[in-house]
Length: 240
Image (cartoon, helix red, strand yellow):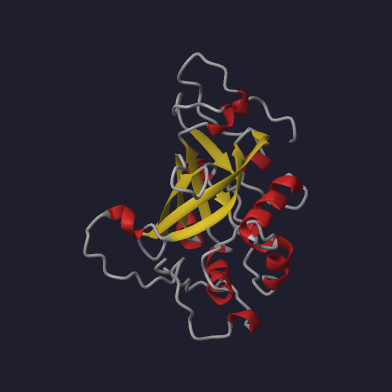
């Protein structure tokens, strides 16, 4: 896989990574020229983490992102339910910098989730990068924000992408993610989230900006059902 991330020349494993007012590009990428002109060919960064339907933290799922950088502040990802050839495309995510997030209207901020715990807690991983490249990437993503829409409700075992899109959120502290879900992911990808967490202890980042992770502090946001069918994954949260 052609890597989107190149080391910055510093020993990132021993360097304090802090956010600054002069934020670097989210991915620090140097994209190789693509002669094919096919947009999907630039989605080469593989990220793996976990989400749940806004309003129902019990609906936890592992997600597989393939991402491409649009600008220094914006990255776009397509999401699949696996990383094999026959995986279903289940949604999209947009990742923006803290600088850009601050400019959003307050009602728009409620649709976004923070990345701080995903990075610090070892939930977010980039399995196809070297340790140094992944560490550098996480140092840039720790202050980022994501907006994620799922268009194929795979939790209902549907053979078709029925119904409307659903807003996904992500985790913000220990004890929220099902430990078996994390254990199974780590075993399959041959990684140790606890080790990732320890290696990232030098990645500081700032506290999340008020407005993100709205499910924690107010009514969870979710689109109304567009068809008259039961969608158990979108029912009232029992874990709040």
